Amino acid sequence: MKRTKITETVEYVEPRSMKLFRACAGALVHGSRRIAMDANPGPGDVEALLEEFRPHVAFLSHYHIDHTIWARAAVQAGARVVIAESEVPLVRSLAHFVERTAGPAGLTESWERFVTETAGYGQVPAVAPLRAGDGVLDCGVPMELVPTPGHSPGHTAVFFPRDRILFTGDMGLDRFGPWYGWVDCDLAKMVESYLRLKALDARVLLTSHGGVITGDIPAVWDRALGAIFRREAKVESWLDQGWDREHMIREGLFFPNKDAVAEPMRSFLRMWDGTMVDHHAKALAQGGLRSLFPDVCKGLGIR
Image (cartoon, rainbow, N blue to C red; front, side):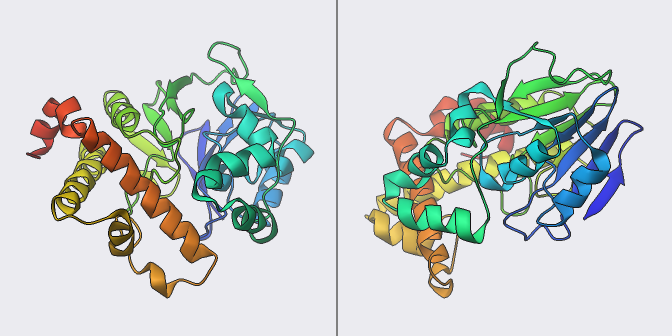
């Protein structure tokens, strides 16, 4: 893993490789209490990190497994694990998590096998709800919780106003762009969350999968927003051509060349691509995101 000092109180920790599907980058807060945020650099490294850092609190930005798989180790290290209240049941119960995610696609058995046996994921009964103003993150370092639903219902970012540093969580600021492959993702809320974060005028972004970003940050937000609207236009074009859902999945909205991937991952990629197509088709049936956010489209130069 790699650890980068951002300020005297904030540190960025990232995996050896951002390609590790069981890992993500996170932040460490050195205050009167130590707080680890999505600090999951991967198997082996996370145990070493927890042993050295000894966090009092482990903050989870949302329930997806690359951000929560380290939570059991955090509990064993003595940390209080917290997540947005709406997502507590998804972390406490493996059965609920599996049904909520892969259930709509009929892939619960293969998905549960994958997350437990291949990824090493497990439920965390000790996870506690995080509520604004409850003082769990109080450590002498000014922080603001920023609700950012869309990628997940309770996704939460953290803003450090003194230094204008934003821990973005999983907002798709890497080269792949925004991801919304579960049924509980929400495109309109995701766009609103991007606008909310952009308005903070942060000078440093600490991202889950895209490293530390300091240059031309408004353009970074616009690139992510633009990706969503361009995908909507692509799905609209496919629908106009008479393509059915299966044709769109084969073509790939987010994941190309799925046939080159072995099972069970191929089925998961198809599931996620199909769900992303469904989100856009649903939005288009209601007039499209462009009708909801005309000023955003105008600012991005999207017609």
